[in-house]
Image: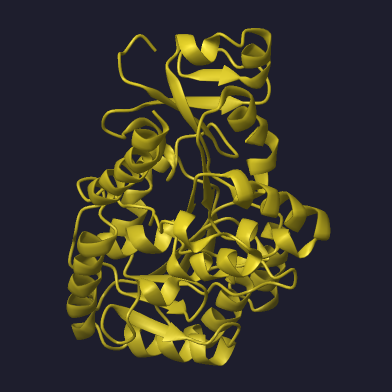
Length: 353
């Protein structure tokens, strides 16, 4: 914290390393400081209690703005803009722009933030449209795609060894909108046509018990493996060890939607052909029959058909994988997205003085 660079306070749901971490600590010209509600001992973290106890910290640490990475939490930190007269930046990642505003009190909170906040960063064009409908001024919005570290998630051509298994992979939180229940049902149909197919599910969450019951119901215990959440620093090995990535996301009963799944981007960066859905921002990433296959939300039969089609056409894997990598390099390159984020900070802070 002794650098001469100005600092941005950042708040997200978790302090764990993950997809958002580079957006906090790798913005050229700015120091990132994590903001927590409760005290936490770390040089790169401060709490609201510390700020309230020592208001001079804002000036001492050269804090020039606050970036809340989930719109549903922005109201908790809105006072920092008013009290310390620093700009407020707010991200929208999915639920915060779709299910969260359905409650009147939450929509009221968002409208207050929209009125005085400085910039709003939806992670895709789809969510940009959603927050405009909610009342966010279009002039304050900048789409900021989550970027992929192309040096870390390296390209590898997927090839079929006729003597080995075909591995389908899905990674994400075990919640309804990820569509993993539909994926398991679809895989039961795939297994009838492709006996050496395997499915790996990586994640954790409230739906795990339901998934395990489905696996037992369809007698897939020897073909479907559930792996607990893996350290993010090791996840690329799982991509490289699989052939086809599946992301069958859908809008759940609460109206909760994705932005664009980060795991889908990472899989594409490694050259893996994908099967996904025409859901939320996913069509901004995946082009049907160019970098992968897209099917309607919740359609088990069409999802299975796409998985079988791709599994039986390994000659398509390389072209799909190369096109996927090119798309990530062009529009979802981490370095490029971080430069955009810096530009968006600069355009506000240069006026703010």
